Image (cartoon, rainbow, N blue to C red; front, side, top):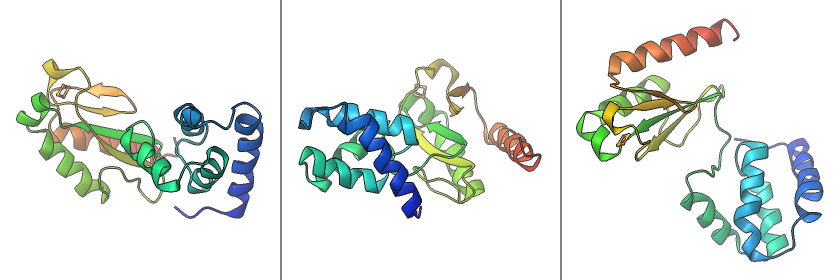
Length: 167
Ligand code: FES
């Protein structure tokens, strides 16, 4: 997603107030700082990655590596609704890949991406601890068990209808 100078100014202000004044410039603080950034912005903007690289004296590639290693960090803003399909073993053997394929087909994006209107993101997860309900998908953390492609379609139709009503 394109970032404007205006959002870079906001990001610099955030860094001043919440990071430079609070954290020591130590490499060990990287994860904690990334948590704060993720929580505040909903993702880790590129501009902040540069600032962190300067501040903590860590190469950009290393920061990128940490962000992509932990699934809780994202490089793009998340949509209003994040739909995660569990591809853990119990869900996979019960056909969760079909649900994932349908989701990608309907939203025309891949896992890890967000629709251009900012409404939906797709994630894949490995196990959400609800194997007894396999296959499972979640919408903003709410679990839909014994899922089918039809159930997914129904949930998507409802969310899209809410969007069209401006909810
Ligand atoms: S494998 Fe899907 S919830 Fe456990």
